[in-house]
Image (cartoon, rainbow, N blue to C red; front, side, top):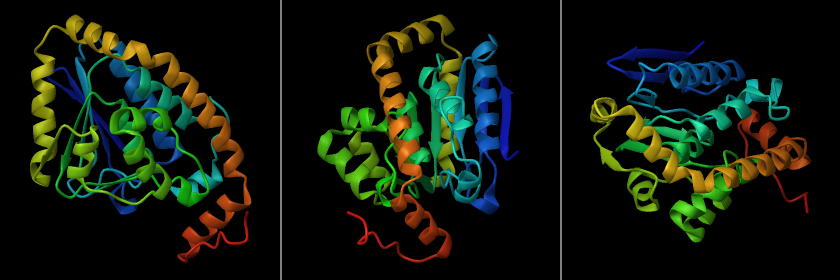
Length: 254
């Protein structure tokens, strides 16, 4: 399945474990992520959740071949259910990021409460480069967190940026040596797990409730545009170029 789930001392860890593919996410992995989040939400013994990859890579984003074979269709697709699940998760949600965090690997972090990045972390949102548009309500959340110009640079150019820039943008709490990222995040989760669970849930709900309806609307709008753009000639050229290991040619499109 390539998703490892473990619960210990009231903390559930959800780990990407597909090193041979740089933790690229398949539809089956999205379904497993949905199940893991739902189980953690329903289990009163779980106080918080940590999402991480390895010391070398968080996730390369969607597995392109699997994505093209199993494109998302509507709000019942595994990726759509995962995005809704992570956006509405009621308990503290932490992430530890080392190495590449591509596409959804970056946008999912906007829904986490605490994010810690290793010195090797590289974030990117190359949706426009693939002839697509942002997802996970990142077109709403990233401008809100980072400011419009910084968000535009990330979402329009899609170029990778490092952990210090991510911290300056406001969605990374601290930058650590790679070997310390996951242990530090688990230690922070342990601190949270020892606090009153109800206080954490209510505090998180109060902080997020002003944006929840807007996030849901933005996800729906992004999803509708994404579905149309996925079938566009520009996207076909982008994915063909990616699989063919060549530069795309968008000059033919107006």
